[in-house]
Amino acid sequence: FALFVGILGHSVASGLLLNTWKQTPSSHRFNPLRLKGGCGFLGVYGSSLDQQSLRMKVLELSRLIRHRGPDGSGIHLVPLEKDVPGSRISALGHERLAIVGAMDDPQERKEAKISGQHDKLHTLSGNQPLFSHDRSLALAVNGEIYNHEELKKMVKDPTPWRTKSDCESIIHLYSEVGDEVASLLDGDFAFAIAGAKGEFYAARDPMGVDSMYMGWGKDGSVWFASEMKCLLKDCQRIEQFPPGHYWSHKTKQLTQYYKPKWFDVQYATEKLNFDVIKDTLLKAIEKRLMTDVPYGVLLSGGLDSSLVASCVVKMCDRLGKPRPATFSIGLKGCPDLSNARKVADMIGTEHHEFHFTVDEGIDAVQDVIYHLETYDVTTIRAGTPMFLLARKIKAMGVKMVLSGEGADEELGGYLYFHKAPNGTELHEECVRKIRMLYLFDCLRANKATMAWGLEARVPFLDKDFLDVVMSLEPDCKLVRKGAKEQFIEKWVVREAFNRKDENGEVYLPKEVLFRQKEQFSDGVGYDWIDGLKAHSNKVVDDMMFAFRADRFPHNTPGTKEAYYSRMIFEQYFPTETALHTVPGGPSVACSTAKAIEWDVEWKKAAAAGSMLDQSGRAVDVHDSAKKVF
Image (cartoon, rainbow, N blue to C red; front, top):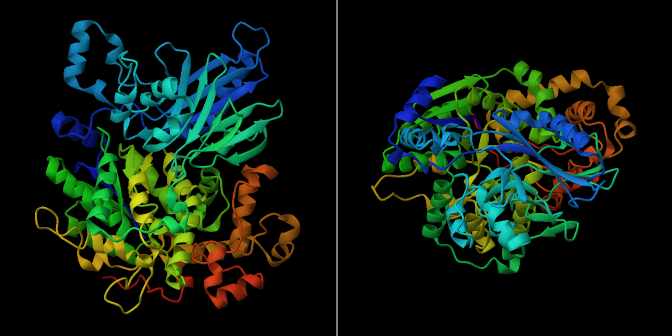
């Protein structure tokens, strides 16, 4: 689709946006609690380096992810054995993206001056690492904890907390419950904790919304980082840290903590309840509005982001906040730009659109691959316009956006799901897609935005919403062409919002609510993909491509476009272990390899070694996006 961003406030200039926000009464802001936002971190367990050498090493490597947190840095070192000469050392490094919080409130600043609490006068006073009350535990985290108020009530220690950061709940809860802490969190997170008694704990959110890697050093140390580039020099083996897992010094291995029943299709038995679906998504969106700075909403002319944007507009109206403006990016004349303008008019937002050319996209591909740390073709195709737009968003003073990732995976939204032979196979494919999101769409959304210090939040991947839609009887997600119900992909969520709100107003007009799925890399303009293919065909000649299996024996590229991406990836990440962090295998229109069995022609092509097209245009049910509604 064309990609849009809605920004609270109507001014385009960064300063005016911030001034407009600051002038909004505090009672009209969403939870003024934030002292941090998206960040980057590095953690090392049991390094054999001496303290000074390790400190310099962590500082050096943390600079590689400073784009994720340009507002501040922090570092903490602790020996595994206290007062033991030559003890191995653990370390945490942190690069911080600050989302200005309550300490910027005029009344609190006035009170701080009167009381002499000068530390409260610093807007960026929430720098990490965060510490336990006795300072024996330190935390470096990238994330948002949406149930932090409930967690605060669970903590038995009555000592006042040092900050108003939602993430401070992690360190105090870990002090009391230990390894169980990750399973109690509702949010998107990647973090590491290091303790004075040799403790070390690292965890990632259930879906892998926030990026995280782990590696094993030559000296037996274990490393953790927001991005792989921090680990290349010092780790012999690198893997993506799996979502829904934690690593503890107690077992020195990964433990899966997120195990929803719906991973098994036999537990997908719930009947359709449109009210529950609607209300759960609304709550997921509202909890992600936890900020007190100008923020954005990623929008498109399609269903997912249009629905999120519409809901946010209604919440703003209800709470007396400024309506968001909307921003788009695409090739000039692409149909989604037209669709986007129509959606913006329908939901009542001020709209601005940005354009990029095929040449500008191609020029950005090297930077995109460096930041996304992948050679997956679809991720690069979609990541390039998102990367270009994120830069423009951040330049306007915005640090957080909401996005629509996840809806297609949990609701069977990709066009190839039309081929699903039965509900059981559809559900199992949804589970496979959800469990692989961290390798593709979550990776893209997180890194394409954080390349410019912009944080993306994804309400469709809320744990509660996932439980609701993934526990449904899978037959209700099947597409039944020509029927009165289930006649289009993602029908269950479309129908859940095909009703009026408490004010008697629709969420979206039917022409938007029931518009067919269009993949992001297609929707910004078909010429983008076609142009990238043409450029790759010029760079990679026939002789190079003929010997592709000799040059790239692992995940051998099936097209010249894939070959081109792989060449660039290996310039930045030349190790064998880096190659294995990117998945491979046959796919059509974003399917898993297993789903190729649903179509005879796809199966034949895969068996013959042909590279199937990742574009949604490869599926015969696709309607051209040139049909502007």
